[in-house]
Length: 419
Image (cartoon, rainbow, N blue to C red; front, side, top):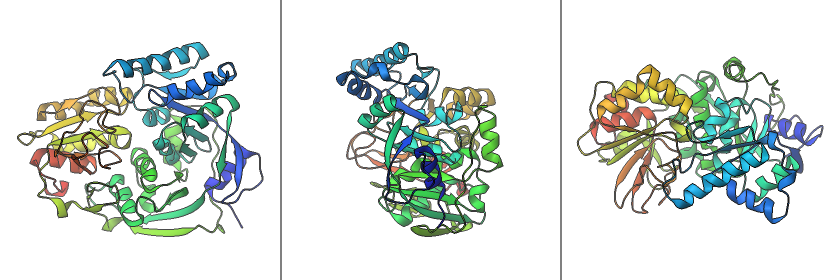
């Protein structure tokens, strides 16, 4: 019996010829990520056990992204703690305010993660990097602290699920709609501790940024990791960012997956996830009369340059609906600069929106767009659980940048094909 991509990557990092689902292994880690919320608790664990001097700085990437610029003294102290640790340990890959952006976009953009890597991060959306054909997953700060010292971590080898998407996406339908269709089908716990492998002609046709959107949201259905096979598009993306040699893995032909799921991409239409769960999915047409107070375009899920282009295409020359607020946050400062140079940001500003520096901000309900009681928001983020983005009585719908832009113009949730 052969092995899946996930099993092969874990086996290679565990120094084993083969592994099987359910097996417990100790595996070498290529990169470890922490940010301003999760970094300080990990540092405290190191100090508690007098292990600071054993940290391997070359494996670590630290990014200030969740509450930046800081909104209060506590968030300022968190940022200071990360800065001090990075300086003290000589961590090269430290991204301060204005230098990086949201961690899950920074690491791929800076070439810090490549095909074949095994990456862990102190954040659940670390699974994003799997679009590059690597194994990446989130962990708690205690495991992260241990890995900073040991250069390895323990894993239970996950079972693998195969998701196949064939056909061609329709106009104004994107990778966000594909992953919402997936979560809607299998539920928020349908892939608990499973590896989700994405294949098919519709996947091959997606730009890298939309691939990242899909792997970013595997955690929304409980996935341990999500990954895609390396193709020429992947190789070009990586080659433009790093000279580090990568390794490509392909699942064996005779491998047996735990389950198989097939989708006709041409049948997928613009979708939303209704309150209060990412699996509460329906066509946009089913909720077209819902009035919206705030639209947010950004986050690690849909703050890529391609996402901003999609939204600006819809918004170009238009104005926001009366009484509606639009917040746009490019995922990294590199994306911000490119969008500025292309004139993309002009469309948002001229429409009446506001563009913020790169930060997680409104997505986890921390700042720069927190929702109030009974307000309705349409966000391009990854989660809409009750209280996630502010007040527990706020209602958040998840959608693509196309749908978000169309909604911003009309004031009610709108199918972008109708604008």
